[in-house]
Length: 207
Length: 103
Image (cartoon, rainbow over all chains, first blue to last red; front, side, top):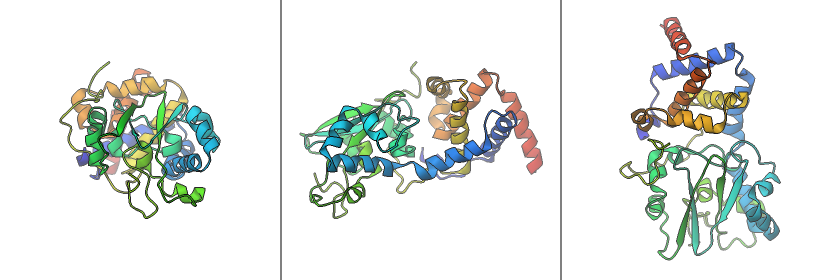
């Protein structure tokens, strides 16, 4: 799929999208201002920094973590992170013995309110096909080598239910504020293809 | 319905192509397709399952060789056409008109 990633699309495609947009606007089926707001929202406002705040609070506040694991949708809404593709959320917790990994084998379901729009690799065939039957190999491809005795749980998202991984809190962060903790939480850690960043900046140093 | 979209467990699809510091969109047309699709979702003529099903009916060979937002475009055109909101013939005609304008 990489051939599509950076290449300029054929002008046929650009023209076709232009044609489609002009017709939908003329017919009054879409509103130009609404299109701009949608793009600005998902390009600039909603993204993995939202999810990082949720994870950091769960690390810092045991009562919040309990609420988050019991009813993720409601606990995440405490931050105001609600809306499309986050209507029903489940948070799955990593522990020393269990590592969770999320995928959408059928398409691209992903928790938009906490992670934004998914990266290309998440939506592309290699990850979708292999995450479910060779998760250990997939994680190795991301540079994450898990000990054999760690159980890997793979969660296949649906249009109704979306997952967020609660990574393990890195060691050496006992004195960290919530903001400092959030800075250690990456998009990839919340998908489950990485661990949270260690305080010294290295990935996966808490294994 | 199974089909080319039902990728779980399939082999031979190559290595994962990870992009460091990936932008949300890679081209302006992707922004437009994203916004048009979501906006038409709000319009309410179809629901999310119908949108997915429309993308999944992209012919298999085309599905596997298309980028993500190309599949969204294909699905959106299919829904608009089937609902009678905007036919493919209308889009084709507008493409021809735009091409004439630009040349």
